[in-house]
Length: 276
Length: 318
Image 1 (cartoon, each protein chain N blue to C red):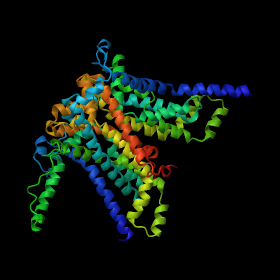
Image 2 (image 1 turned 90 degrees about the vertical axis):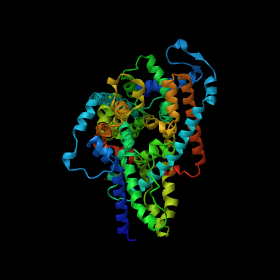
Image 3 (image 1 turned 180 degrees about the horizontal axis):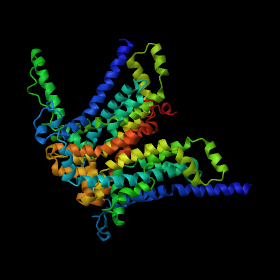
Image 4 (image 1 turned 45 degrees about the vertical axis):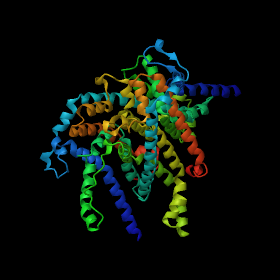
């Protein structure tokens, strides 16, 4: 086979995979706009034009349960956790990368070790601690942990980035007699846009979709985030495929937007692929 | 002068501690404290209500595991699921990475697109797949039935019998197909593993391939002797994280379990969750958590040990 034939074959393969990956969301979009009996009627015959689309499904999907409330709750949790994660994990990353202090290397190894701990080992004792602090049924168990360093992976990303900043930046600032804080706030953070973007995006998407923690800590349904709200939807209106699809797609819009906006930063920080 | 430098050094030390203080507090409150509490709790009987109801019970929780017949089933379920899930993810993740790596100019674009489903891992995605895999009206089975219909004619013509007797799988509504359903759903998100493989491939570079091609090595040999060693650290990383995550899988079995599966999605994590939050046996649940940790550590250590000769860690470094 010639090399052009090979190239065409590979491109065809990539396009085919892309179609397969897009198909579930496309079907969900189609189903979210159908009357329910249309979905139960079986084969996806061509839908009669645009007027066959039932946009009212979306209105119904967000009003049957207090779905807008769930969305708002998720926004509050996500924004609060993301700010905390970026702030405290960048602080720790900075201290691990640019400051010398006793026990630094031991602490860094400890940080990485926490990544290996299964969440379930910690879930029960964490729950009991938060319960005895009187934090159950509040957002504190969901938000406070991310203000305490966030996750080890994010600290690691910040540390890698800060280590790559040339020493000359720091020396120049030190000559002017800056403090650690000024060095962090006025020199390091302003040049960290890529890693801040990546950490903020990953943290936001993760916390938007977090399910087990809110399931365990929240019991008043007015405080539910979207994830637990969708679970309630499944339990109560599960057979309304069109409404479930509409609600699910609405819940997927924010993560998709965040990833689209942060795409450049994400690829640079976690992958390494260049170009594109 | 000496004193000045010393003083500066001292100041630096304390400064560093301030910066990590939130993380230190987190380490104590979220990791070290809970780990110790879990250790103590594993030897106690407690309903989690008031301290007075707590009583020390020694090894009773661990002895109770032996008589918990649903525990064995849950553990077996989790291991079977992991044994299907991890290899499937590795093969498809590596396949996607090779596919993307063939694109010279648009690697980033394809990688982003394939990676996208990976970040959409929440309840919404699970509910979409719940309907995609519906045995009667889901599009997956509609497609399978359409293909079976199409094959019927040619099969009869070739004398291979008819496809009329076959039907599309009942997916989540059968004890046999429930776990493969989860594996299939998760393949949609193989882009996460792909990204790790892709980074290893890009670091490995093309020069070895070029040299081998000039020496007349075919595609298969180059894959086996160059590509696989190049990605071996990524393979190891994906395998280990895959095992750790699969053994803890919770959201899917929690949301997708039903009566027809006959407990085949009763995974270890679900067993632990129910022991703690439905039966309020916190001591027993803490003991289960320790069992999981011990199993995962044993798995990880064995894998690292067994593959130590084969995984070329130095090729993964810059």
